[in-house]
Length: 142
Image 1 (cartoon, helix red, strand yellow):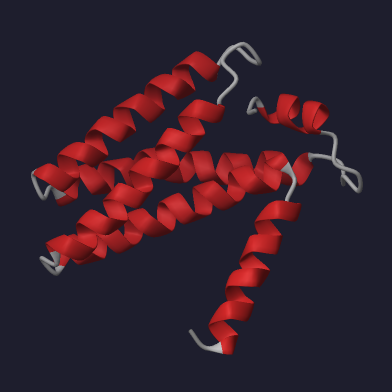
Image 2 (cartoon, rainbow, N blue to C red; image 1 turned 90 degrees about the vertical axis):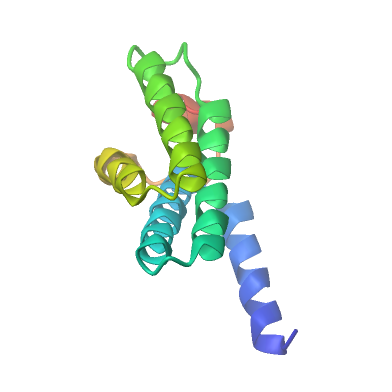
């Protein structure tokens, strides 16, 4: 690899390692929607290999979001977990059946959530020192 690629990866790694839980959550949602947009484009172009790679990565992100969800932290957590389960199944179907409509449905379901998490994250007080218990609890994630 060249030096600029190595530097970029190092920067991204440091960004993730130093991010607050709220920022990590919004980063996951941003990447999830980016993967889905790329999958949709690849499906439209009938580039099934590229679409599959993007859909599989999106499924990994959904699995991470599901596993980090603290179901006892707030009343809506169980419903959010159900949505993650639905989206995970829809992404599998989109991949197996080359179904662009399923991919678009997932985008339509997740985009408002991404916006809501960004708004919630922006409304949190600035956190100079990271307190995992306080930060995670405030967003309902571990």
